[in-house]
Image (cartoon, rainbow over all chains, first blue to last red; front, side, top):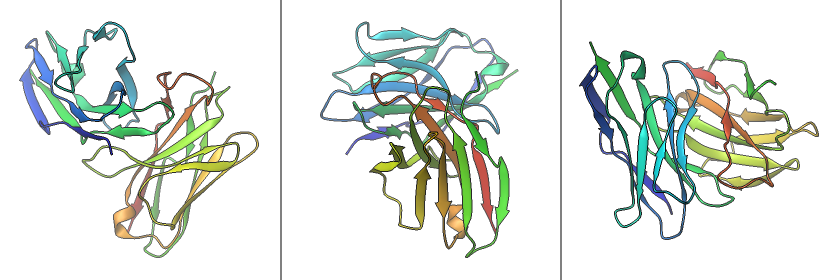
Length: 112
Length: 115
């Protein structure tokens, strides 16, 4: 069975500082990888996804994630965070035709 | 073009009662999945419906059941509610024939509180 680990439950960081949210997954087969963001009292919004090709994927708001097959990781990074990035971030994996398996989430708090 | 819509947005039920949550998928989508997100946790897959049948099911008891209608909308029913059923219930819609990596759209969710 697949599983997703997000080791950091909470990450406080000052505004304009860089941040990395870690994600590791366990799967013996190829999977698709996703990061979703959830703002307070809202549903899930897709941030970025890795399907194939370049291992570095980017979102429109400055986040990027790199797929590392050997380390089974898909860490999320942003070089300079804003107050508006405060949210819960979920890493997820999905096999072809199967449902999502989500990690427990990381709460990013950006401090002024 | 409306996205995924869920109703109600919030509701409070008493232990032992039954609840029905509703989901309308994004236009053109034919597959609906339901997830339970308990407070402070990631979403957990409940089940998926396609062509009005349950196609996949997660590790949830039979108290959780669902239905899909010919217009692709779906309902999630939970019987004999327990306090532990308090959670955000998310509906996700997709197109069955699309690539598995194709974007799946989530609704805003239904917040269920069991007292």
